[in-house]
Length: 195
Image 1 (spheres, helix red, strand yellow):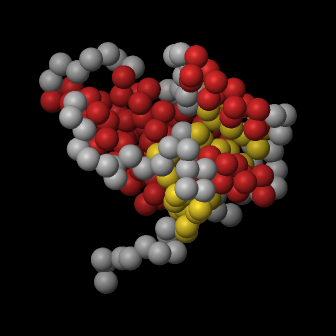
Image 2: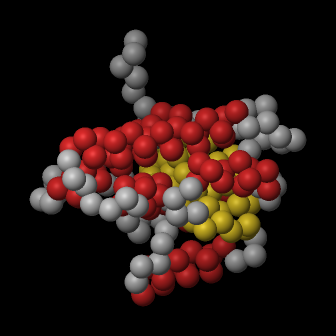
Image 3: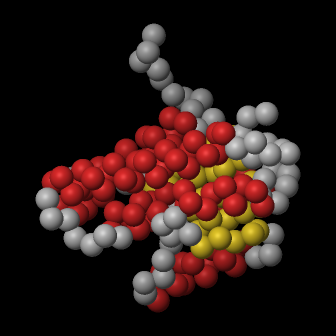
């Protein structure tokens, strides 16, 4: 029995979260929702409220802004289908949790920590052995399609986020991209340069 990882990406307000929720709801078993967002202002509180309204009572809800690697095992014990929404907020939280950067080595160290956290979560999912197959769906933003940002923090975040997305997409059994409410299967369209 192999646990499944599904990767859902797209731009802001593209419909990727709704698509990921549709996949989750089509699967058998208890649903779990790992919300990584933090409500820093009224607009973010409103966004979180809209997501909670969509989930209603169908889901076990877990508010985990940073410590996904420490808590994923508990969630897998309680749920058969887990939706992590989203990798972008989780990466943001990990990037900023220790304050400002003092050097390039500081940036490099934080990137290593973030990638290690993501790898730990993927390893736990793949190695988890329970009574039934688990499906974990990751939602993320595709943020690397625009111009190079002017400010340093935005460039650092864009680069790290790109590496996080590549790491999870490479491990995923299925990968989808939603654009303007329309979703394509990007694993099916993947071109290999490995022969």
